[in-house]
Image (cartoon, rainbow, N blue to C red):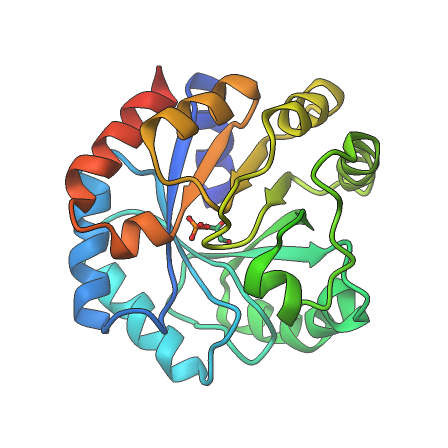
Length: 245
Ligand code: 1GP
């Protein structure tokens, strides 16, 4: 089964958790250990990517270590065509919809898609929208941030994503955001689309994860907690339990 079909099937049954690893933040060995932990406690995929990568070698080494240590699908979460890895199972073929830089909307994709075809990683099309505060992704992506209360604009982007035929829509507050995307925005988007809604950025506790899932997120992504929480096993277990409830 393709990674896309596997996710769509699981999303039809329950809310999911994805774990994000930025190759800049730990050694490949540590990434391998974390991915094993993620699998053991019920996360459904490992996303690999970051906004400030310097080489594809970093991505290759992290992806390889993850593959060696867990059976979870590895999905690239790319910031550009230079940072792809042939060792991944799939790639979020994502357009950063509110970037002012056409590179992040489509041109990097034009550069990277022949590689994706050549090595046979599975593209998973996704509309990606960065909401205030946006953090590093907002800055590096040269984004016109959507305001936290601007539900109408978020819904317009979400519907456009669906009408373009993309498979997933991702509402992003930015890694390490002090506040995640508001529940009201998640609910408004969810009410209007029928493709799975991914929410990430600033989700660090079971309570917050529960609220976001209840508001309508189908998949919750955590990066900072996964990589930096001192009690990562306990915190992630609680987060995944709260999402599934
Ligand atoms: C970043 O949404 C993800 O793209 C994860 O954010 O690091 O805040 O969990 P955090």
